[in-house]
Image 1: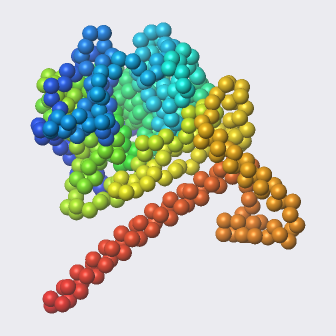
Image 2: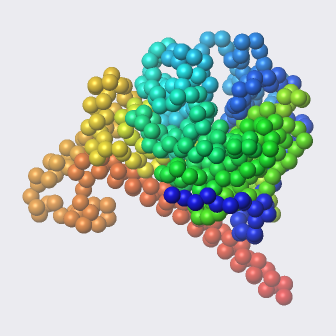
Image 3: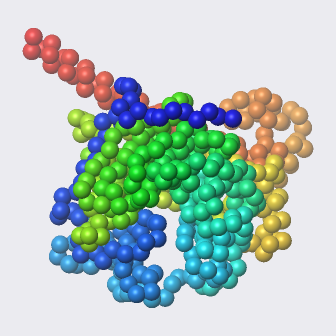
Length: 490
């Protein structure tokens, strides 16, 4: 059991960190988006979604359900780009019919393509596989029915194998989404959670909510033990909901208050005190909701590590807020831009449904970089056998790409079996750079696939190492030239 720590200091002792001096910078008025009829809904949501091309904002209309799509880069000559909507869309691409009451939350799976989670006021969470041709889906692939009240928040861990929820019954739950079972449940009565968030791969959860005295409160939890929080802290007496946003690349946590003008930000560390307060961005304009730009849409030349899109309904305005690390150099800063999640899914919907876990595809933000794969993890020692069985039993459909991969692996396995029948004198060879008996070949499809991804990961690391060495060589050459010039001048 974990002891609850004391109050966190708003003025902590000096702590070395590259993000200690991060500051928020509001965009100038000519880079904001005005005359936007922002929704007046009282529902607690972000009301905004952003990618490097467009901003989608929920707008005010009778009946609800309308949203506006705005291009990030506006054209001054009013020449509509091909990617923008040429007409109003009234027919959806797919229609999901399952909830018998209003839907409040939807979340895409972080690594599997076309897997969507929805939660409604019927207290159910439904998992949908959209990787089908049908335009109308009347049955989800899974229904999670473990909540006794409305689900207020959903969050996935990095590979999407776990789902954390905050419910109106005051409880935080960690759920195995494919099995539909609760692995951990928090019933800590002095913290009423409204929002919950997985902190990447740190095996911790962060929640925002209210205390017994209705003060706004934050709490940090061990995902394997939700009996008592690792720490909890009262922030203030305001009534607006707190939205937590975590950046796993920089380990920075942002807390955005609905109805506030400020954004608090912290740095997360694996050891105590866990949560280190950095600074607070302040503005006199209150936000109704907030949108977050994916990392691939940031301005790395300006050392921008995060960007919010702040909805200001009193002025019908969308205001970008850039979080910037002050650096003197104008070159690419590799230490503040580690590999980040790419836009492509890491595995297909059917593979995830059949027990595969895989982290996101990673990409460097350095111009010209390519995405690299991550290592897969399996729930069972023989996952490919179960993939074929489940796809037959449940009528699941595997993508053509997945079937081709399985066929290649089976062919290579048959080839290895035929080679095992050769005389022992012909078996002596080098496998992966070492003696075959020191590093035996894989005997199962699972072992073969894991070895393949290990090799891909090794290639990725070697490429990164070569790139780092090239940068170091260039820096040494510049330093050598400077030394020679100084010597010649003297």
